Image (cartoon, rainbow, N blue to C red; front, side, top):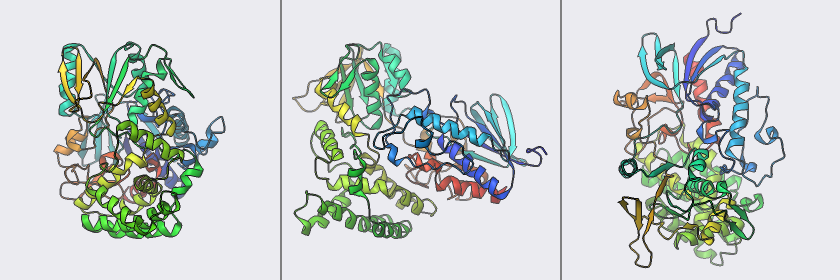
Length: 549
């Protein structure tokens, strides 16, 4: 019997890791229930399943910010490739960080298993969907000047679509085009590495000092023949003369604990996790101030215990008071409590990750929060959370990413080695004044002791927000203008139900239209994690599809 006979048809737009996770979850349920469903998948990329972040052809210098020991994206029951560590052709060091390209190849192997399912024939269309329409028969999609459908359901897993440039970047783009200057994106890193071959002896500025800046620094140095050795960075002579990195606060993220042993210092006790789960249930249905108090109350005993176990604390009596003060400030003024120059903060993060410096309150909070990410998603995502409460909790989580989403300590050491070698300069890292000149961008500081510098090349390493009003890629603007996609509140992304169904401006589910991932930030949390792509959100969506179709 033809598997397509009488099979329901759905479409998935976007086939990165989240689209793959959705297909795996759906395939698992179809096998369990003995049902059939045909799926059309649309994605113009040449590396389906991996997405641009994990392109198998990406530079081997681009690393995950997750060590091998923490990669836990459990494959479905029908998978033949097993866990990531089992799939690799070598036994990985549990404390090392894999390349994004290796993970991308693994994800493509998992997609091959999905496509082998008889009960769920998957047809890949390597095209961009430009238009979506609802009809009496279902949803129709236009891609490559052809209409496809009708579909009983459409799932959007778009990742981070192209956005309109912010005012600063728009002005810089026009300036670069007019003056014939280089204004480049951080990714793909392979393309940046090729461009950088022509920047020998130039002064290059990097807009952004978060995770992407570490990849950019390697593309400008190690990819040009330089070497990071025990004694420091050995220049090839082919790299830029200087690299000027900057951001609004000028603070690099803190490196993750270097070893499993050090990471274990921050492990919450089972009873502490139970308290947090209960607290999150109450926080999700509270007003913003009460939510902060409830979450703080769950964090304080854990952080205080770890703080007092470390040699940092001979002041056990006021440890909890210090933790409370730190948390209260973090909710209203994130990232303001780390003091020192950008390099001092970078080095402090290295020492903390190496276990050579007693952990600070902020570092402990960030690592505990990282370990509670699954519980955080499980407690928040299935619940209807008031918009202002969601905004407060999302803001708290985003602020802590400077700790919880930190880079490998090896990357932080490399950045410090480039500073020591006189190639990377963070003297203008804190929100410099930037003047457009005929030959580039002139960066200057309010501090008299810091000399102005003119860069002839600018690299944008800032991840745009998922604000629906800024999305320029097809589909989202039309869906937003029609009222089918509606932001939860100002500064957050689309309003969705727990199972991914899109909610319109009236809060009513849009029949047959679902959205998972970053463009639902606020309705869901912690969406930038690889693990979230294969977690409960995709399972809830798959269960919902089988109920509705």
